[in-house]
Length: 271
Image 1 (cartoon, rainbow, N blue to C red):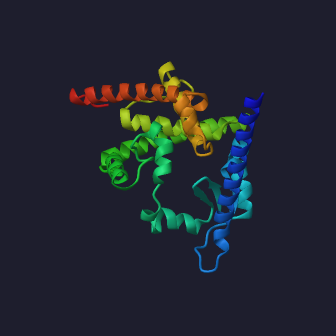
Image 2: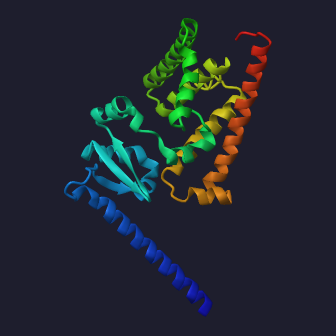
Image 3: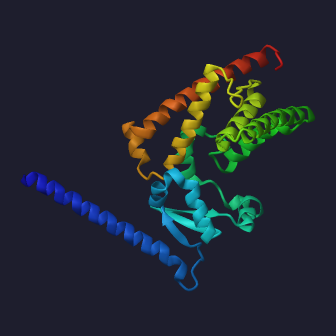
């Protein structure tokens, strides 16, 4: 009993210290904006814990916040996240001063298990290299026409599905439809392979890949709001264990078709 009491006391003390540390951290960060001559920061309206609490309605939560502030911060240990719906701020970040706004080490750490050193995860010279590689798809008239034709075909297919559902007054997961249209287009352009997920007629292998990629993307998103995801990854439990399995499915499918396409190109086969 004495041993259990000591353990409980230590845990309570640790929890108390953690709460004090968080309170101190928030007071320091929140207090920055009020110091004369200090940098101006967007208002802090919540923390990563609010994101976790609203996880199942995250976009609605953001929308509620945007109704109050066009630009705001959500705080997490060691850093803050800035969200904006202000067109001027978006233009400043993505165009006027793009070089100042890298994705950052934290983003790379969260996403690299799925995206590797791809354009969605990296900054600097690696990003420039990936952008250059991606630009080859649009660097010649023939490739531009082919890519445009693929996107147009899938856009028309998407519009037909939406129109049919609307006419029948059937609910639809529009985000999932957009994801499928994008995935079908990218795979056709990159590998000459039509996954056909948008029409629901994908082969079993393609369906497994699409489902695995969709799940993996969701698990990657969870890392941005779960401060303890590294512990789960180390223990290989929960969402991190599921993510590892989904990434294996994605990698096996992608590398299989990369090798097949490389063999076709070596043999002079055009798709």
